[in-house]
Amino acid sequence: MDSTPAQRRLQAIHGHLTTAAADSESLLRPNLTAGEFVSEQGYSVVLPEKLQTGKWNVYRSARSPLKLVSRFPDHPEIGTLHDNFVHAVDTFRDYKYLGTRIRVDGTVGEYKWMTYGEASTARSAIGSGLIYHGIPKGAGIGLYFINRPEWLIVDHACSAYSYISVPLYDTLGPDAVKYIVNHAVVQVIFCVPETLNSLLSFLADIPTVRLIVVVGGIDDRIPSLPSSTGVKVVTYSKLLSQGNSSLQPFFPPEPEDVATICYTSGTTGTPKGAVLTHGNLIANVAGATMAIKFYPSDVYISYLPLAHIYERANQVMTVYFGVAVGFYQGDSLKLMDDMAALRPTIFCSVPRLYNRIYAGITNAVKTSGVLRERLFTAAYNAKKQALLSGKNPSPMWDRLVFNKIKAKLGGRVRFMASGASPLSPDVMEFLKM
Image (cartoon, rainbow, N blue to C red):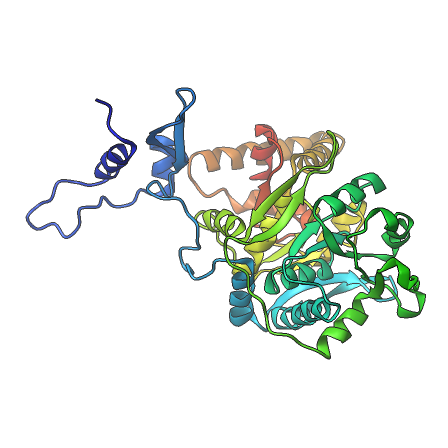
């Protein structure tokens, strides 16, 4: 007779135990290092369960073979995005958090920073401002603008007051915006002046909307809508002021409450929304922290769309570790200029951009002359061989060749991640140099 799933799981656990010796203090084998796990059985382990359909194996991370990770190992009390931000504010209150180069007048300068404590104050004001306008707990809040500090502050306000954030791609056309707003029953939309007129042109088609908040808007330039529309338009600064004058206590969510509805861009039909709870997002990032560690001294550049779950998860992780987040100025063609000014230590991207960086550098090497090309090839091969052998490469190659390349990304990047699609092995190998 086949054993039950419970019996098979018990057998799997027994496989991690050793025979008790008279002087043994523990039945558990010592944990393997990450390298030992990878060399012996890869990044995952096979569980005794089988899928009900087909003869497929069920795998789990080699770092946690006996249970699913649902909380941060060091802080199991963090169960929601609100808990995560409260932890960050308590721990990193005076540390830099949100930085931008864009000035009030639209010019670009050096990065100016808001601390975790200051962001917390703004979060409370925005959430209280929404309550001031009668927005009920559980309402959908649309974010219709690109990455900037206000985006994350609104998202934190949603978490603190149990609202559901609904990101809207800034590149979406009217039909997709209307579909998502109606589908998610969005009651508030945060936008920028550039997208305000578009929203107002189809306001009659999104009847659930009660409030539009214009980020970066100027009070005396905000249109006044007829009361018959049932929609108010205010600036972000006005909402901050209204909230500060009537601060409300938090309405913290539970881990099983919905945190966000993340929609696809609608390139293959109508957009499809993934409903994600606070527990979903915390579990995702908690699992990643078993392999990745960041520090308050780290600096992250935010330019990947916050409407994508990749960047959203990255932001949950930066908060947990107290990382400073600098935003690009909004133009991907000027990203390298932003990198040089910010000098990030963490750079997360997608294969398309990494391929562009790789092609740009290799093409520059090929056209730099025979001697420089030979020097680069010698440096690349020597460093590659040292890394494969588990040895420290000679610092000479960094001084002669690679530091100049690193300077293109600000000169301090120590961690790079790639997501969204597969990265070519050649490009990955090159980036490790």
